[in-house]
Image (cartoon, rainbow, N blue to C red; front, side):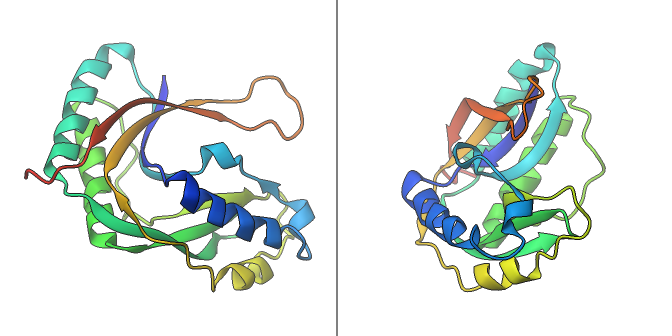
Amino acid sequence: MRLFAAVLPPPAQLAELAREVDRLAHLPGAGRLRWTSRPGWHFTLAFMGEVDDALLPDLHARLARAAHRTAPFPLRLHGGGHFGRAVLWTGAAGDLDRLRLLADRTEAAARRAGVPMDEHRAYHPHLTVARSRAQDVDLRPLVAALAPFEGSRWEVAELALVRSHLPGGGRPGEQPRYETVAAWALDGAG
């Protein structure tokens, strides 16, 4: 199973972002981007890739402990940025220290469960809204238009384990599908 741990923003906050993205879609260069699927919008905490089914019971137990040790925290969608010329994203504001702590805990849980993880990198919270394969797309006007975006606050109260179903049909514009396979309440007991 192809898995990742994530924070899933609530529908109301995703609707706010959708309105903002709809506004961006009319800007120069926007037509050359592949906009991500709105049902799949999320903050990845730890990408695990293909996980052997034999590891799932221990992974679930360790992720449950990570959630149990983390208190709920406030977050909101905020501003935007880009990674090179390939990825346009919106960021987060709120208790980013707690979000980073949850990301670190989920990565550690996966490692301890035996999931081979890539080299650890500092966590940079972002929600991808568009991608480009072309190297000549200038994302700066889109980032500038997204910069003032301030979503409404919500309380992050859950850690989700999400399965990614990659597109396999070869149809243009086909997007991955995401399925939440488990979720644990944050309760700050540790």
